[in-house]
Length: 172
Image (cartoon, rainbow, N blue to C red; front, side, top):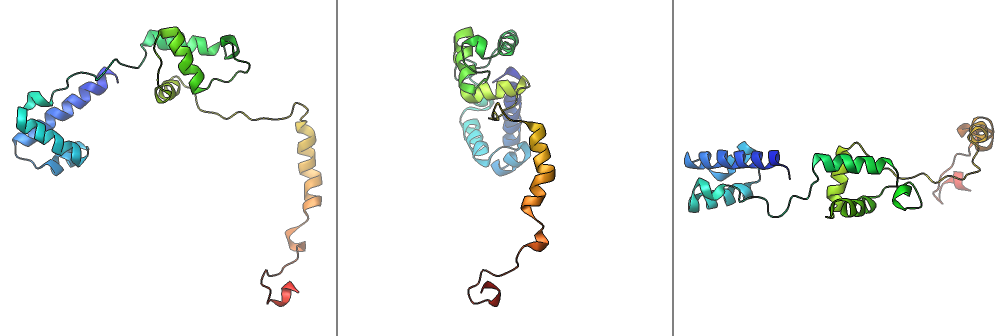
């Protein structure tokens, strides 16, 4: 989580403490600050026990799993070289492969969700590869669809109208 996110949460908690000091009920604090009611009740209990200092953030629970801007740039240059340059047989970057790459490049492995968010911010989008035959002839397919398929399909007006009901005279 970045510093801006921590600062914003800190501001919200400060606002909550001020509202509690004014006597605002927890559900109204939750609605005003757009947080869950459970969070507002928890903050109120912590505030009542230790004041505004108790609501202050104790810092991140562990090391920040994200990469620095310089590391993101290095990763982006490395991804642009392609997956084959990293030793993979095909040119597909998967989340698992990118996570393994970050582990070898920077010494810590990111979660797949973190990798997904990071790739999205870098402008990459999830895609499924389309498997097509090498012999595929797009012009021949387009011609078949244009001229042959309508003749094979026939018109809807020529289809036999009927009923699936066994008691209907049209089904006999």
